[in-house]
Amino acid sequence: MTNHSAPDRPVAGDWLALREPADAAAREDSLPLIGRLVRHWEELGASGSSGAEPVVVVDLGAGTGANRAWLARHLPGPQRWILLDHDRELLDQAVAAAREEGTEVVPVLAGVEELGRVLAEHPAARRLVTCSALLDLLTREQLRELARVLSEEAVPALLALTVDGEVLIDPPHPLDPSVLGAFEDHQHRGELAGTDAVRLAAEALRERGMVVDVVPTPWWIADQAWARPLLERFLADRADAAVEHRPDLTAEAHAWVRTRLVDCARGRLQATVGHADVLGLPPVS
Ligand SMILES: C[S@@+](CC[C@H](N)C(=O)[O-])C[C@H]1O[C@@H](n2cnc3c(N)ncnc32)[C@H](O)[C@@H]1O
Image (spheres, rainbow, N blue to C red):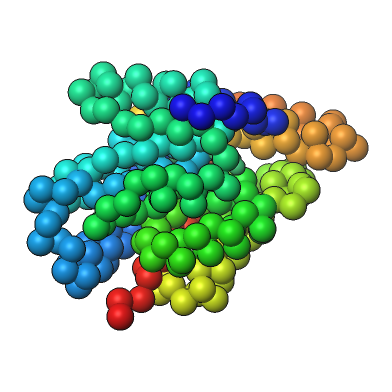
């Protein structure tokens, strides 16, 4: 692993575990994107060598490895996974999880800006850059740079599960707009793309000549076995971030999360959380 400074705001590993079943269910909606990716490789004629040569997959912001765990079983043939993240602790967990299932992965402790170097170090007939739940955490400039590297290297990209800002909690609460609005503003802090990330990434890829498809992959949180702990954490995290961004909303946010958690414990809450998956393919000449 290369050396890299720790992230300012580390993502909690237990949050990644809570969201994994909701992510997996949501990704069923984007399976056609994987079909398109495979057809792209076939058109390139590289699939003839696929039996022997593994596809190199670079997972940006790999976290604890949830994207690999899901995607590896949906991609055909042998694969060599490179997991890149700027958080050493999460990356260690991802490597350990892969090893437990008998898979060796290549960890890269680095920021997304290292993608160009990583691709240069791993040439292959078929490559894929992927990520899940990452794009909203990047800046507009980082999204533009990602599109530049992908198009110059002519590498397909499957950029999964980016939040698009839609949050519908049923039944509604009068404080939903202010608390959820403050949360959304928090996601746009600094230069972060936040809930504009899907649109910005798709635009940047198209401007670079990539062929882009976007598929909605919302979370439907209702009465699934995994729903309640995910929803509780989702509500608490939104209230905390809303208060961090708008300290004047402290009383409202605390009142909101108290009521919401009681409703959740009584099994009265359902939620839809909008996400989208983006597939970017280099043009086949
Ligand atoms: C919300 S988590 C998603 C993790 C994993 N892909 C998943 O779906 O469970 C975002 C991940 O991106 C990493 N990350 C955020 N910004 C990054 C950056 N600029 N460079 C590298 N990793 C980054 C975080 O450390 C975290 O592991």
